[in-house]
Length: 251
Ligand code: FPP
Image (spheres, rainbow, N blue to C red):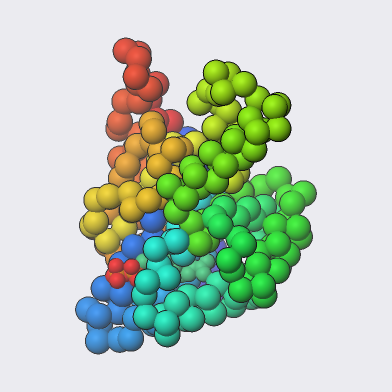
């Protein structure tokens, strides 16, 4: 087997966005197009995820957030939900050691309470094991919905008000931001969605206020480093003005 071209990866061809969030869409359609079961699409989706995390680290991206199971995905057939849970279990069991070795810090966002206790334990284990790592941060959105996250934040704010620790008139954007699931993670600069669909589907609605959106017309299992770099190049063409007049180019 030829050695990986480290010189290529060490010399990033461009300055990367700090935070890239990804809606990994199209596993089912990828499988259907090949006459394969949907589960095979999800399995190949995990391989694409491994490639993407590796490439993101090499390119110098600091944060990658992935939409791995949405709060709405429970409405899928029981067998598919079971398959997705099993993939998460296997992903943590098989890949956690390597992620840790590569200095990746794992963070989880989403609703924890209603999860199977074993899944919840694995998520906590992944966060605990990697909490002191200072390389790439991989934020896994699991059982995640943005509206639900904002509602949780509102509950946390309301608790402070109820305890008399916060004056309602003093609630600001920053107050809400501090009560989100991962308040210290910066907003995504770039959100990528694969499969050609062009919507956010309840993903990071608060944090996406000024994100650049790039829609990629390939199914997630086909995503790779070249596709990631192409999306970043598109992002770099955009002018980011954050509501002002002066462009802060995506770099
Ligand atoms: C969308 O494809 C993808 C998902 C609902 C799940 C994404 C999950 C993975 C890539 C693998 C699991 C990752 C971890 C960390 C466990 P779709 O099924 O909606 O495809 P379709 O729109 O073509 O039907």
